[in-house]
Image 1 (cartoon, rainbow, N blue to C red):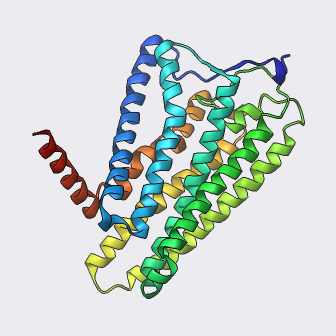
Image 2: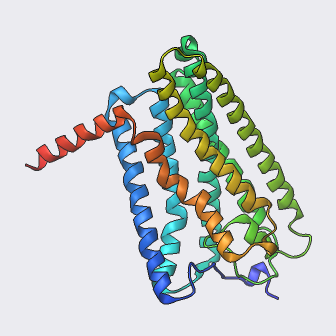
Length: 311
């Protein structure tokens, strides 16, 4: 059997078995990718250009949009290229880089979603202290912590995963390079160290999820006591989608990382991976921002300005 020193490339899971379906998947993924680029790009532009949106909530939305752009750009372009050119190959270096950036963006995004739940908790449950607890310095520190945690988390897992001897071939049972299917290629018992790191990371993720749930329990208790029906509707429309995205992350991610891949069908593996790697970056702009009156007003002004410049 080959070892890791003799592997120059990996073979990824194909999106479809027939050429026609491969091309169909290419166009579907291209549409999804362009929608994600457009949505997150518009949010980033709106928040960066309008000084009225330089508030903690929109600052975190800007960071979320940037992370979403990075996350979906790590996986989809290679998958689309493989589907278009009818290939499955990715180089050893390319696989390591893809795994590093995917874990980085995903970890940083989950940390940021946890911070955003705290921001909503302070805004709704402690409004008088919001300016003090969420000043510009605190927001910058929390955002930097989210990005830094992503880098450290990714460095740890990437270095540890690719230091393992691989003696079970080079076929990765996923459409992009990810930790569990690469661990499946490692020699017997050599993956236990990375498995321990994965369990530790999953425990941290679950702890963040509990924090998010507790934050929203407190938020909903306060919201239900609001006398204004409009205020309750606004709070619920802001918080429920956030909770739904975090829940989608945790449920699909834990299934992918804890479920034995020997009992998972390739189609189920592919579908679950799409749910936590492609769906959130595409839907986040619509969930968080495109229904927001301030964001839509800013985008309308930017569009009018652009059309005026073209005339």
